[in-house]
Image (cartoon, rainbow, N blue to C red; front, side, top):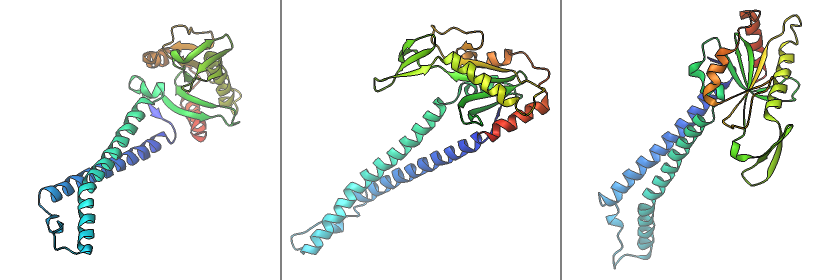
Length: 252
């Protein structure tokens, strides 16, 4: 499966940032260990131990040195652990936040291409995910968690946010179907003699959501099989597919 646009570059930049954070964290932890050994294992600070005959300046210098020696290892260690923890958190979050088709990439053939967060040319909508393949194109959108849905109406849903407030959204299946129609019109804009078939699907595990004539309802593990089961559009040849991919790439 091909990832369209700047997603790979962004992923590389994210990985580089994570690696830098992890490296800095490991350096800080190593420094903490070295300082702790120098302070407690070698007697490095023994010359700065105050004595009865020491002057005021010597006592102040000794106190500052001992304060640094006792607190620096712990401070370096805590900063290092925080950096490493942040890097691990980013890696975990990155793995958990993939789009449905991206998570199913292992089940998709090489002739499938996927793009996330595609902004339509008129700026009216950002499409969460578009998959382009021998079938034409497919719009894939995720359902909100079933436990956050306060009301499922024929036109609108009420979603309870983390802060307890309720937010009204369009019916997810109807919205995905409209997005598919928008993308269909966009792809056919400069090729009036050819219509690209555009399918729509919502992904989730809500048992109360049933497919409609214009939008499928599938579970996360059905994304790959659903895409590969779509009928091949014979007129959507390699040249037309490459034209659509260029259009999508330009919208990222």
